[in-house]
Length: 284
Image (cartoon, rainbow, N blue to C red; front, top):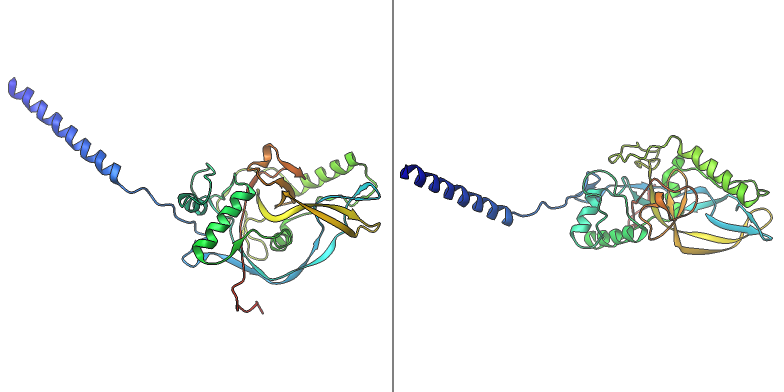
């Protein structure tokens, strides 16, 4: 009997000792490091070079003629050559910046889904960190650059009718936005889940609207719709998607509020432009 008790005590001591050893090893084990997504190679993020071209562009904001709200006319706007990320910044990409203490945690976890729940300032923090890490200059695209990169994946919700009263204009804009969005699909998809456009850029027509460096603009237009004067209001930034939206810059989820102009986006994310390297020849 005594031998059985002693044996039990000995075995119990061994279990406790082994458990303590395992816990000690776990406590000292290194944490899993954040790693970038498939959209990032050893040379940095995968980019697509967009040749110089022109777009049919109109500023987004509030414009008037003789005290009446009107829509500015479309104009042909030249856009210089630039390079833009093929994919949106993913959760795994963003997690590396968070781990470095340079980006605020968005609370969305890790994975290959696009990083959402970020505001304009978060996107710029990532651009600053990536620039310092790579020695290159990364930034948010301008609104015209984003439109050029989107190609046919972005539509215009601005009503052309100049004789509409404010309520009719808002309703017309809403209907155009609904038409462009099509059937609602708010479920996020991994990189490339919404396909690529004709320029080889992925997910421009998906359900993640992307921050740009563009500002909402207010001004005066002539009788023919030509912009005579404009003043940017950069507390509200332009987000590119199936249609443009003007979002207050500190908002992370515009679906619950903070959309100044247009229908609210399903999600807010971003991709960046890489500044041309000095001496690098343009695309022929």
